[in-house]
View 1 (cartoon, helix red, strand yellow):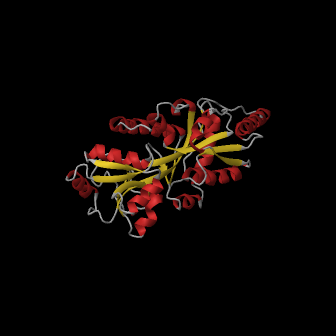
View 2 (view 1 turned 135 degrees about the vertical axis):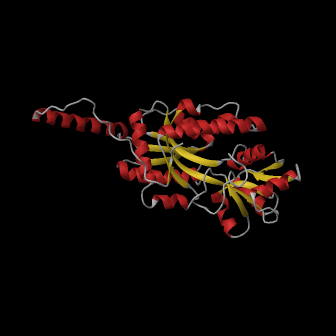
View 3 (view 1 turned 90 degrees about the vertical axis):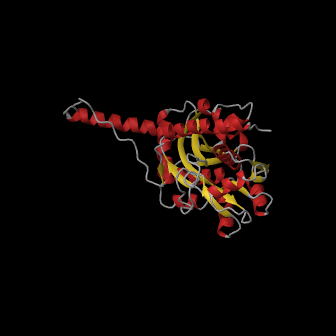
Length: 339
């Protein structure tokens, strides 16, 4: 996927006219100019209506909520229109899927939008049919961390240690289907290491269990363990990203450290209801890209443990489809279902 990491977004170039010779008459020139102004104004009117714009996301205080509010604040300024954040929790995607496709409702969410249908028998929306990708926005690196008491300092050492003790090594994980769960299941599948899951009610409790020595290792979002890594309470071995993370560049990727082809991270992006006009999708894509690459915005996301990414709606859709294929295989093979 040709996304842009921490870079200024590129915008589509204007099409060159082919064989069209503009008339020379001054009155005709004036008419063409007036029509162009009217078309541009009409395009803006499709987005900037007399209604406020809502960005629907997960529960208050979550990473999704924080990111949505950062973007909403910038869009309010650039669009000259009120953009608010609505916390709809686990029904955010379903709510957005049923909203009018008029540009007034957006969804800011992560992997669970397209993973939930793979984990649950019945979901009241189809991620590919009912939602239109607008823009990928951030990547949250997932880090492989161990308790200092575990005598391993690399991915290869961990694999060897686990294979010498099949079924004896445990890992902490949050809710079913979370990155803390799926990242390790993929690792197990690709290394044939028999490591047993200890489930917790969320990432926070899982990290606390790791700190307390209840479980010796886990995959965790970097933002949840960075402080403990710096304090020496946990040891980071590798990052799940496809490329080294800008947040912790000295850490090797799991792929480079011994598991070729491995890639696991939490990605977040903006969606609109399906059938939202392409002109509105394109306008939001450009405005979000401008917001994400504006001076000062990058630092706001980095401070929360997120890397900024930009790209086209088509690139975001391609990424979602590849995620469904990749994680669908892991979920099927491991027999993972929501309880």
